[in-house]
Amino acid sequence: MKKTNVLFSLILLVSCSLISFSTYGQRGDGPPNGERKGPPHGGRGPEQTKTLEEIGGYKIGDVATDFSLKNVDGNMVSLADIKNAKGYIVTFTCNECPFAKMYEDRLIELHTKYAPKGYSVIAINPNSIASDKENFEAMKKRAAEKNFPFAYLVDDKQEIFPKYGAVRTPHVFLLDNERKVQYIGAIDNNSRSAKDVTEKYVENAILALEKGEKPTPNLTKAIGCPVKAK
Figure: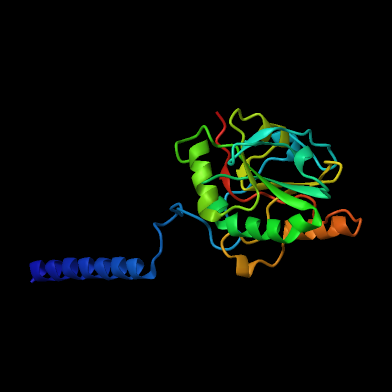
């Protein structure tokens, strides 16, 4: 009789475990305390946690020095080459980071809307040395696939991104017509879903400059993959 009760208890315990495991799998939960892979929901994600002082690079109000970097069309491009500029949307991005990919269409939209008004997107890839998927040939392929209307430049010596203090892809630095840094950070407040964005940080900063005002906020945390420094 005791053996029967023990056997019954073991069967009941195994059955409960299987039911619990099955329910756990059907809910689609990740492992307890596990790490979620891939892009986050909403605006959550890897965030810049260091201060501008800790990162180094430009601060709000600093004047950015010009640069000359190779574009995917083979030509060298500098900020001075952009005629009648009222500002510059300097964006550090790359080919493979899922966050960078999610923002490609939004960068195209920003450039299409604001380049005619004097604010061009200038995209810079600081990760070209990281892998064959980020090198110059891969950049040319990605630019062609997405039909980028803006310059996509290679920071092949990794000299420019440290000057700016870029730590994520994407990471935006909005400059005015005197190349003074007026905004640093994220493009908007929802990396995963463009339709669910409630704050367009870069666009709002541009509109503030157009009114002769200072952007508010002028600093947000960049959401994206860490720049792959050598």
